[in-house]
Length: 110
Image (cartoon, rainbow, N blue to C red; front, side):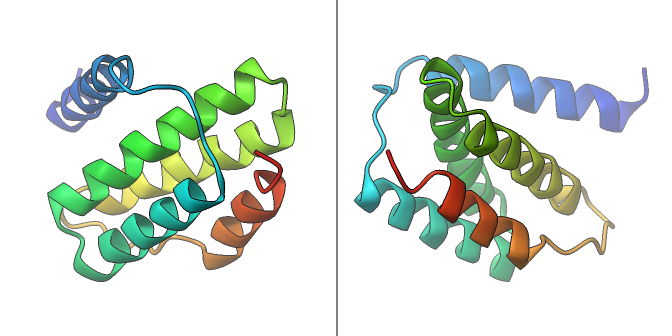
């Protein structure tokens, strides 16, 4: 396993453990907070806002799965993948703003 794959796996395990301490509830203010963290992460590419965005997205993804809101869950998973790829050192990938819009639309009924 390559070093980058190990780091990615470590991040996912960390997020899974961290999310287990958060209550599973999302509302409109939570979506606003997710958007704020996403934009901070995209603008700065710094670890803390990106990690916070990923944690919030993981909570949203788990809520969507529990409520069988599969369009929301699928879009969130895609956004999480883009965010992880973007945060890798040396990667010039940009997060898709249309995907962020799709997450907001698909997940707006929480």
